[in-house]
Amino acid sequence: MHFGGIYEDEVVGKMYDRRLMGRFFAYILPYRRTLVSALALLPFIAVTKLSQPWILKMAIDGHIVKGQMEGLPALAAAFLGIIFAESLLMFAQVYMLTWVGQRVMYDIRVQLFTHIQRLSARFFDQTPVGSLVSRLTSDIEVLGEMFAAGIVTVVGDILVLAGIVGIMLWMNVKLSLVTFSVLPLLIWVAFSFRNWMRVAFRQVRSRQANLSAFLTESLGGMAVVQLFNRERDEAKEFQRLNKSYVEANLPVITWDAALYAVVESLSSVAVALIIWYGGGEIIKGTLSFGALVAFIQYIEKFFSPIRDLSAKYSVMQGAMASLERVFTLLDNKEWEPGAVPAPKREEVAAPACVSAPQNALQSICFNDVWFAYNGEDYVLKGVSLQMKRGEKVALVGETGGGKTTVTRLLSRLYDVQRGSITIDGTDLRDMPLQQLRRRIGVVLQDPYLFSGTIAYNISLGDPEAMKRVEQAAAVVGADRFIRELPKGYDEEVRERGVNFSAGERQLISFARAVAFDPEILVLDEATASVDTASERLIQQGLEGLMQGRTTLVVAHRLSTIRDADRIAVIHRGEKAEEGTHAELMAARGLYYRLYQLQFKD
Ligand code: ADP
Ligand code: MG
Image (cartoon, rainbow, N blue to C red; front, side, top):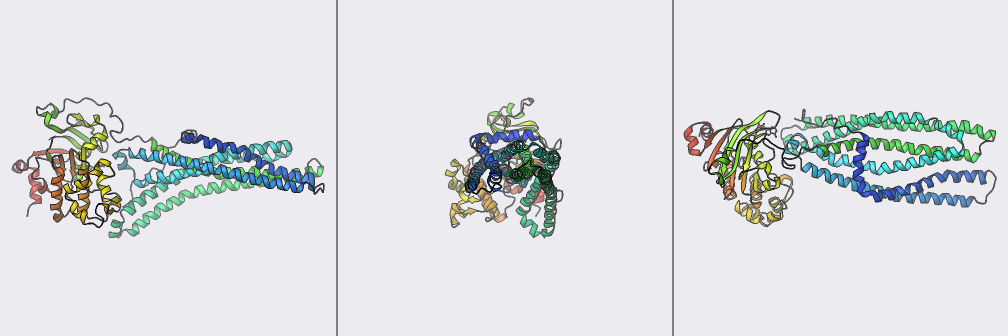
C-alpha cells in the first residue's frame, strides 16, 4: 500500500550558508539586546579561562621551584575564585542563549504554521501531512540545538582561541610555532568534511520526514490495516523506512567521530612535539619549568574549543540542512487561490448568464468552465450551469465524472483554468476569499470533526456561530440525539468523531453549516454514507438546512433529488443533460438510465 507512496524529495533545495545565516539572522534580530548581553560576557569568560594556566605558571616558577610556601594559599584561592566566576558567567550566558533560542523557535514555528495554512489545496494534494509535521517539530528542534550549542559559544571559542594564540606567542614564539604547525592540516580536514556532512544531514532530515509521513498515514488508517491483516506488510515498510533513516545517520556519525578523532590525535601530536622540543629548551635553560606546564595547559585549552567546535560543527551542519527545509517551505508560494490577488486574465466574452435578460435573479453562474488538476488533463470541459437565487440544483452522474470538482471550484479550493464562475455577476476571483467562503456553506461527504465538545464542533469557536448552536441543531433535527447525551452539547467529540455514528456526525456537520448561516449551500453526497433508516432523519435535516438557501447538491441517491428545481447530469467532465426530473425521465437519456439502474426492483 505504501510502496510507491509519494515521499519527499531527498534534496529539498540547497542554499548557500551565507544566505541561510543571513535569513536566520532576521529572526534573531528582535532579541539582539539579550544576545548582545550574552556576547558582552564573552571577554570575561575568556579572561577567566586564560588566566588559569597563568596562575599555575606563577605558582610553579614563583613559589614551588623556589621552595617558597608563602603566597601559595593566596594563589590557590585566586584559582578557585576564578573558576567560580567562570561558572557563574557561563550559567548566565547559557541561560540567555537558550532563552533567545526558544523565542526564535517559537517565532519560526508560528510563521511556518500560518504560512502552511495559506497554502493551496493543490499543495496539500501533493504533500504528506507527516512531512509537514516533521518540519514544524523536529526540524525546528534542530535549529534550537544549534542555538544552545552553537552560534555564540562558537564566537566565544574563537575569542578564547585568539587569546591563547596571543599568550602563547608572547610566552615563546618558537614553541608556539611548533604547536601551530599542526593547524593547516586541521583546517583542511574541517573544510573537506563540511560538504560531506551537509549532504549526509540532508538525507537524515528528509528520511525522518518520510518516516513521520508514513507513521501519520499508517496510524491514522490502523483500522484498515488491522481489518485487512496488513500488519506484517506495514511493519515491513516501516522497517524499510526506519532502516533507511538509520543508514542515513551512519555517515553523519562516521564523519562526526572521524573529525573528533582527527582533532584529538592532532592535539596529542602537538603535546608530543612540545615535550620533545620544550623539554630540550628547559635543559638548555631557555625555558622555565612553569612555562612548559602552562604551555601544555594552554595547548589543552587550545584544542578543547577546537574539539568543541568540531562537535558543534556537525550540529551546525544539521541545523543548516533543517534551515534549508524550513526556508524552502516558507518560500513555497503556492497560495490558496484568493490569498493573493488573482493574476490578470484575458477578458472572455460577456458570460452567457450575465447578459441574459433575467440576470437580476441569477445567483450563480458557471460559464464555460474548464479545469484540470494536472497539466492539460481536463477534468471539466466547458461546463456551464446557472442557478437562480433560492434554487435547488442537483448534480448527478457516474463516479469520477467531475461533480465534486464542480463544488470545489465554487468554494474556490481551486481556480478555474478557462471560463469563469460568477456569483451575482461578480467573478469569484474578484471577491475576497473570506467573504466568498462566508457566503457558502459546504457539507462534505465525510464530515470532519475535531476533538472538542459538540458545541465547539458546530460553531468551530466562531463567536457568531456560537450564539446559534442550539438553534442550528434544532433546524436540522440534531438536537434530539444531542439532548439525550449525558452532557448534551458539552459532550466531548474524540478525534474525528469516532464516538459517534456516521449519521450523527453528518447531522453535526449540517448543524455546523446552518450555524454559519450561509446564503449558498453545497452538499456533496451528504447522504451517501448513511443507512436508509437514518436517511429519513437526515433528509428531514436537509430540508431544514436548505430552507431559503441557494443549494447545489451532489446526489448519489436519486430519490433524494426528485424535487430539485433542476438536475444536471455531469458525464466525463461535461454537462450531458439538464432539466427537471420529469423532463429528464421523458428524454430517456443518461439520467433515465441511471434512474433505472437504481430502481430496477
Ligand atoms: P465525482 O465527484 O463526480 O465522482 P470528482 O470531481 O471527484 O468526480 O473527480 C473527477 C476526476 O478528477 C476524477 O477522474 C478524479 O480522479 C480526478 N481528481 C479528483 N480530485 C483530484 C485531485 N485532488 N487531484 C487529482 N485528480 C483529482
Ligand atoms: Mg464526488
